[in-house]
Each structure stands twice: as C-alpha cells, then as structure tokens.
Image (cartoon, rainbow, N blue to C red; front, side):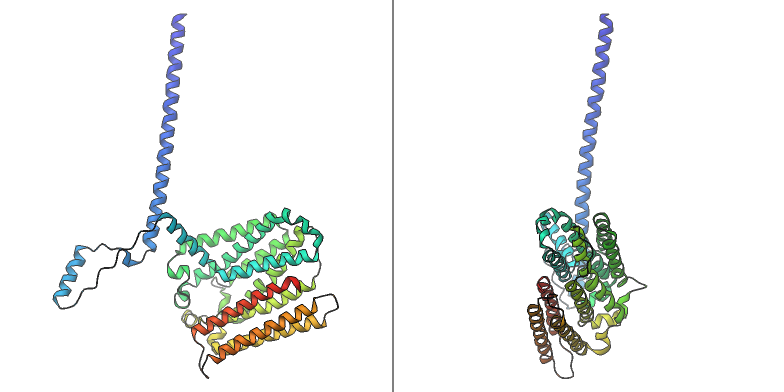
Length: 402
C-alpha cells in the first residue's frame, strides 16, 4: 500500500513539473512573439521614415563618392558641400507627422462644409420640432455616428480623387500629401477603402434604407468623378452636376431627414430645406467650376477639359460671380414672394443681400488686381476662391434661422 502511494506521488510530481514547463514555455513564446511584433513595428516605422525622407537626409558619403569629388576637384571644379545632418524624429513626432498628413489628405475646407451641413441640418429639424429638444442627449451617440459616416464619405471621395490626380497635383497642388510624398499610394488606398466601407457599414446599421440609398449613391458618383474610365471630371457639365448633386442636394436633404427619422418623425416637405437644397445645388455647381481656376497648367498637362482652360480664369470667375449673384437675387425673391410664415422674411432677404454685396466686393477686387486683357495671378485666384468658400459657410450660418 505504501509503495502504491509513493508511485502516485511520483506521478503527480512529474505531471506538475510537465505543466510548469509547459506554462513556462508558453510564457517564453508569448514574450518572444511580443518582442518580435515590437521589432516588426519598429522596422516598419524605420523603413517608412527612410522611404519618405528626402534624399539629402542620408549623410554618409561612400568612398567612391569621395574619390569622384577628388577627381572633379583636380579639374578645378568645387565639389558640392555635404548635406547637413538631419535630426532624428522621435516616435511622437513621427506619429504627429502622419496624423497631419492624413488631415491634409482629407482636404479640411471640404470637411468644414460637411460639418456645417450636419450641424445646421440637425438644428433646423430641432427648431421646427422644439418639443424633441429634451431627446437630444439620448440621440447624441447616433448623431455622432452620422457625422462620422459623412466625414468618412467625404474622405473617400476626396481621397480617391487625389490618388488618380497625383500627376496633375504635382503641378497644380504639390503640397497635397500624395504629391508631396507624405503618404504613399498604398497607404492612400488603405485609407480610401477603409473609410468607404466603414461609412457604408455605419449608415446601413443605424439608419433607414432611404438614407443608406442616398449615401451609397453619393459616394458612388463621387468616386465616378475621378475613377477611369468614367472620370466625370473630364467633362465640365458632368463634373458640375456631380459636385452639385453630392454637396447641394444629397447632403442637405439627407442630413435633415436622417434627423427627423432619428426623432421618430415622418417625411414632410419643408420649404426651408427645399430652398437650401436648391440654393446649395447651384452654389456647389459654381464651386465645381471655380475650383479649376488655379489648375489650368496641370489640367492642360493631364488632358482634363475645364471651363477655365477653355475660356480663361478671368472670364470664368466673372461668369461664376454672375451666376451666384442671380442665385442671391432668387433667394431674396423667394423670401419676398413666399406665403406669410414660410420664412423669416426680413432676416432671409437681408442676409442674402449682405452676401450679394460681399460677392460684388470680392469680384471687383479680383478685376482691379488684374490688368486689362490679362489673367489674374495665382495669389489673386486663391484669395477669390477662398472668399467663395467663406460665402458658402455664411449661407449655412443663416440656414437654421431663415
């Protein structure tokens, strides 16, 4: 009997020892794997940094290069000075540079327009149904998802445009991340694919089929604007209609009715929403034309037919201002002729009259800075286009209160 217990204790001791060895082995393997992953991440970061670094950042000069410099010096030519050493970037600086590159990749001025459309569309729906203001805190998570989906859709459209326009952007906009080498084409494709799929998944999961259909339609035609063989941007009329549809009708109509759907309210025809969708459709068409004013050289090189290339930036800027002026006249007439109570008549007419004066002022400034028969400078075109966007933002500032 004692012999039996001794054998049992021996077996138990061996089993415990085997388990201990197994656990220790697993811990060692896990630690090794973690070290391997950390080393891999570090190597990827270093490789990426070396890939994106300018050529002069490598300060080591080979013996062959030194001999070549000596030979050149014998013939009386002064060799170029060695490049100065570049400070190494820390992990935080490296991450910050990547984040700023992604931010620039998203084209911030288009993000501001998208965010304004979101906030003012929600505000408009709540102003029309103030009894639901108490539900606002409970709706914030869903509203945040809606804003995120719109920003992802915006990133998808402007990102895919930069991928296919990189050769043109090297001439027209060399500061953009892909053209400047701050984001590789592969990384840009990952950003575009992830943003497009994530945005669609969010809208599919949290919003009704109508909103999902509008979102899918908008991202699709936004992609066709840039993707060959369609590349709608090659045709001025198709390019204008694409941008006008996305940023004019779909964005404003979609945000307002997505808010109503979140509040549990049904579809109704809203005169202010219909006005804004019409007004911003025309305005977005003007932006589609004026965005090409400073891109004539690159568009000519890339074979992109634009109105600015056909008629010249000055003529197109003058025509764009005329169209916007008529748009403002139409807004003032809408306020004056609408049935009582449809709009806040004085505010709507006065605000658009002020915006029309602003438009006249920036157009006169552009013409005054340009010699007769000449084309405006790049700086003047940039200033004019910036003010066109500022007037776009001003319209959204007025929208909840008209």
